[in-house]
Length: 563
Ligand SMILES: [Zn+2]
Image 1: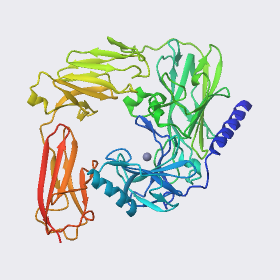
Image 2: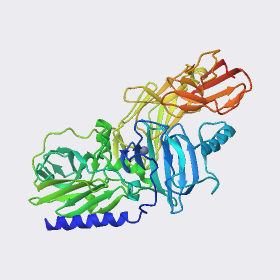
Image 3: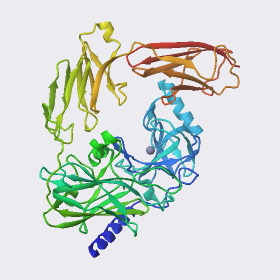
């Protein structure tokens, strides 16, 4: 018991030491409401760790966002996806703050970026202002919160990066106050036999282990019988006070008989390693059940830098006849924790009958490049597309190719070639490569056509098909009608959609002049702001053209009045 205690003191002082490097009380809050989080730093997301915190904005958009310190604007990016409208401010202390999913910028920044949008004739832009061109002061209004880009509800995505390395760091290490006295929640525990001769509870596969809460608030797992090299993993989340959101935990420590075998935390990471999240979680489990098990051991191909301690890669060698006390300590950044004890006894037992791993004709060695010609479709995996060797499940049907399924992650892009030469040139015009989603709907993937050969590059395993789209996009006015007087209108909004291959481009003119339309794919809406151009005619001609990803085109021409 004493050794465990010592280990904990060491662990705690280590985190304190690391956190001391970050300037506290330097930055002010980006919002003037209490910080309640809808997402924590390092939270497990799809193919990445969350690089900032998501601050709730009371289910509203349009809340003022303030610069957290004096600084200069180094980057403004507007995209349909990702961070939506985003602003980057570099501060003199070596850190850059990032504000994402914004509704709009401050009037002066809005004027600056609109000028560029009109010059480039594009809603999507990315600019790196000259050094010092745009200065902001601490607590100056810089933008309004929104829901743009890949955001599924109004909030501010907020990051603090090291300006030099561009590594995102945990914003809560800078002294921001988040009310949190709530312990993380442990949902499920799993044991993993990791070598061919290993077993846990009569099984050679992942097994779920039950646990229960003790009187002292810690958790105790049922006794585990094991042999060979084993590891553990858990499903858990963290909650703050005043919010029901299930956020990510800050740190995970695994001790074996008091010795730290693995410890990692979300103090910082780099964007170049973020996709290795697919080796930290049990990806197969995630593919099947959409829940993420965090492993306390390092799997093949895991190049993450988040570990502060690793002994034997967090794997436990269980010897016959010996007993082990495995402990998991899961903490949030405020130090609220969950502690779980797993008694392990080294005992080899008769195995249960379990189905063998499915063996196919396509055994893939991960570190080599692999090419498969399936007749009518070719698949090329560059070396190290995958983290580990595997039996690939490949199948070619008529205009379809099954490339395994979503239980295996790919780290790099691979190439699929479809032979479309059995279609005439006029038919091929409407065809594209699509990946079938869980509901078997075709989702457009970037298709390069060279004669009868269609190519796509992707990192998602699954079933790909040649799909057809000969239907032009839909365009419809949303807040006005043909020949209407729109004197008091501040905005024009239109609905645009394309069912099959999806919207690729849109462009609009007013009395023959290009106008900026803000496109929000989530609501399929184009919006024009009447402040942009002074109209010199009463009768206005609006023309909107939308093309889809295979080139089908639709144009809406309409007239309205305004004075
Ligand atoms: Zn976010």
